[in-house]
Image (cartoon, rainbow, N blue to C red; front, top):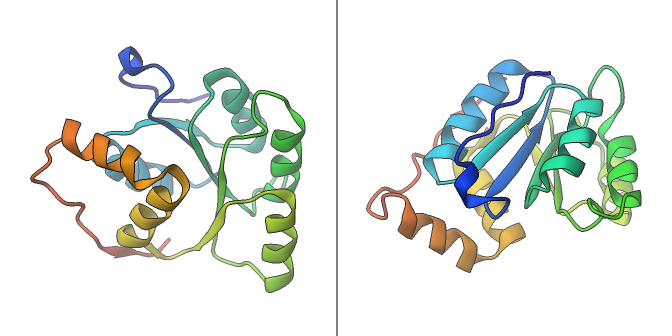
Length: 156
């Protein structure tokens, strides 16, 4: 289990969990989330993701839809069935999502979808949409308010 957790003095208030089997995606995503002031928890498989979600109580989860051991829809079902994870917003990230999958996941409680490749601007906007502008505004004030996110598109 390889998880990275920083800034424990903030508690759970700013934790975001990334569940994705792609290590390079984690590195890139983590770098930018940390630069925006978030604490990042990384899970590289669905089981680790479920465990860390229950243990760490993040404020948002970015979940890869297609993973080798269990697809994201099954992870979402489990998260929504567990009392202390059922209210955590989940955003799917994938390179291949059909309209049927998206519709079904919304019905299960997903808060959104991002399709790889995804720009940092879209990620930033989705976080703001899920957490509210006041949370992001507070983070920006605490972390270099003069710096705006560097919006670039990346491909995996």
